[in-house]
Amino acid sequence: MRKVLVVDDESDVADLFVQRFRREIKRGDVAFTFALSGEQALQIYEARPSDFVLILSDINMPGMSGFELLRRLRERAPELPVVMISAYGDAEKQQQARTLGAVGFVAKPIDFDLLRPCVLGEPGSDG
Image (cartoon, rainbow, N blue to C red; front, side, top):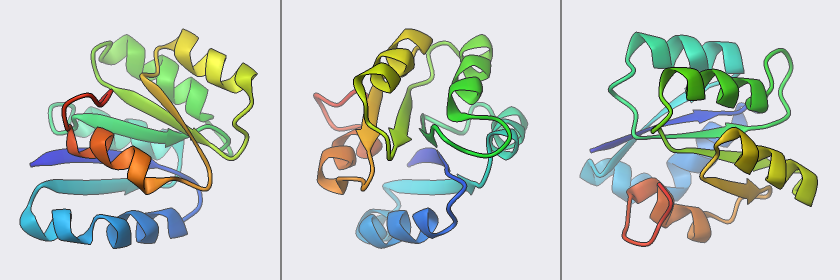
């Protein structure tokens, strides 16, 4: 089972992921843990660092931004795939995400068909 940590300050994002991956969750292919802030995500990750194979993080959040979370995760787990998500998919944010070590960038609204291979660890995906 692939365990994925999803970080977004919008609580309805959790419902979207559960809805879009309900078959895979039911089969036991993937399990999601949700955090509403960068700070919460870091606490969850540090409590169970070996659990997660992928982190999906929003960039713009109150408190710790997704970029700051990415910086801190890179210090602790440089090999852990992190994909950044943002409603503002400009080239500058995408470049900053890559520079900080993100393996991918997804614009909102999320195209789950594009994200699915990464989440499920399918061949040819970044995660």
